[in-house]
Length: 161
Image (cartoon, rainbow, N blue to C red; front, side):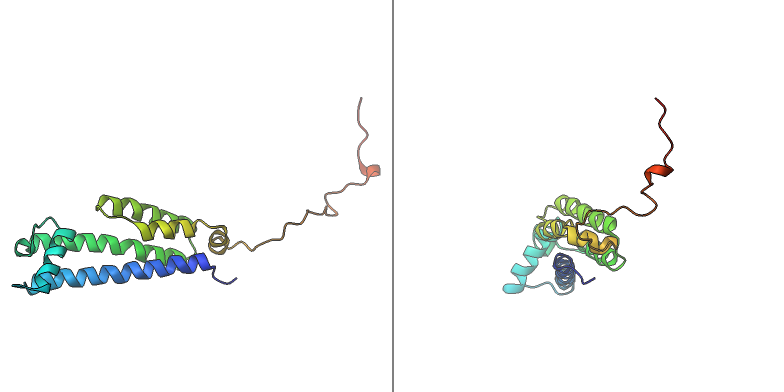
């Protein structure tokens, strides 16, 4: 059975989330390693400091704030990795659980989990369920009685009144 388009969307979203998390981690490291004095980098570092940690600006972005930012990024990277694992292992329950918990965690981190919500909706489609559950599509045909299920009238016991 070919991989459904909805599942390909879920995989693509997981890869996008992984790449965005890696970029966020790289930017957080650059904020700690080379503080800027002025210009574009100072504005970028201020935005990262305010967005990923409790720091007010780039000058107060130290080791504690870096740890906080790293925790946010690592937590947001765990869920796309779990989604990828569940898809490869064909575990639909785990996939739905990872996506649902990812939405709750993202809301707890004061962000809008739009991509994760789209992935959850796509993962709940029937085609994904059939692909991950291993059940083949069956045409809607009436079931025919088998030789074992039909008993000839002569072989039936007489009814008692």
